[in-house]
Amino acid sequence: MRIGSAIFLIALGAILAWAVTPGLIPNVDQTLIGYILMVVGLIGLIASLVLASPGRTRRTSETRSVVDPNTGERITRNESQDGTV
Image 1: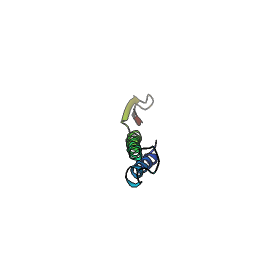
Image 2 (image 1 turned 180 degrees about the vertical axis):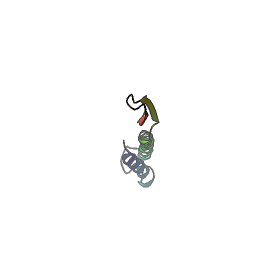
Image 3 (image 1 turned 135 degrees about the vertical axis):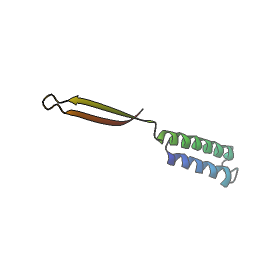
Image 4 (image 1 turned 120 degrees about the vertical axis):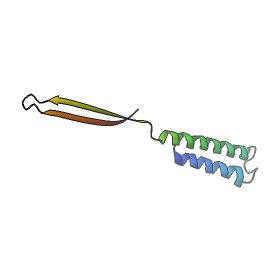
């Protein structure tokens, strides 16, 4: 469930719970169905926001130094990588 569908369920539940005349659909408690849809939409909204949030990131750095045998010069190489856990 994405954010848009969760908001749609919340809005539909609010309409059924508060805006539609009770008894419009026979043998169905529209208010209860509205509250259920709002709760499901809220759970879906929270879940989609948690899943869409960036996770922890891990940065690794590596340094290598070598001496060039021909010139005697020290060569240092630094590498960094950003990755997710």
